[in-house]
Image 1 (cartoon, rainbow, N blue to C red):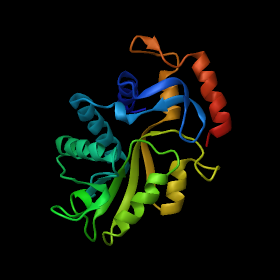
Image 2 (cartoon, one colour; image 1 turned 60 degrees about the vertical axis):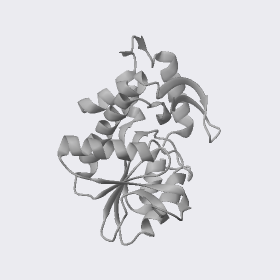
Image 3 (cartoon, helix red, strand yellow; image 1 turned 180 degrees about the horizontal axis):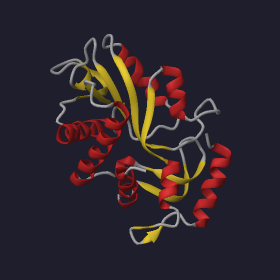
Image 4 (cartoon, rainbow, N blue to C red; image 1 turned 90 degrees about the horizontal axis):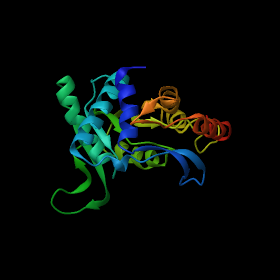
Length: 224
């Protein structure tokens, strides 16, 4: 595993973004782990987060694209932090763009924030995590409405590796099958488990035998 991925796993735990225990998800599933990207709240956290995303996007899609699109609302700080990191790490100016939940009819009009999108733009979508792929259902037509664009792929921070709405493959695989572009993550839960199992992080072991057994049981039901 690349060093930045190992650092990112520790970063999620240290930032209280990735937690282990017992959580009820929106889907109603009882999960032994939970991720909340809203817990990244400080300048240094967002700076580091943008750099981890930038490295993962560069690994997956290179730097030959024009726009990084972050769906409202969590995608707004993700996209801005990551284009800043792209400029810093790779010297490449990527435009950021997000959508509004409501169309603005005065001043800076329209549904988009940041850069406009035009014919020929190559776009990477950035999100925190996706379980059902619902947000892409909303994002895809917005992007298609802007012109003849090329969506290279989606990058999320964590692939939960669970069955999507279809009940057979993961949400990321469903997105690839439905929309025809790649869907990637900075890290997968398999990598998280491999790295953290019985390894002290922030002074304690966060995945011990009990938590590992709960995760294994969860994946025996919901794993993709």
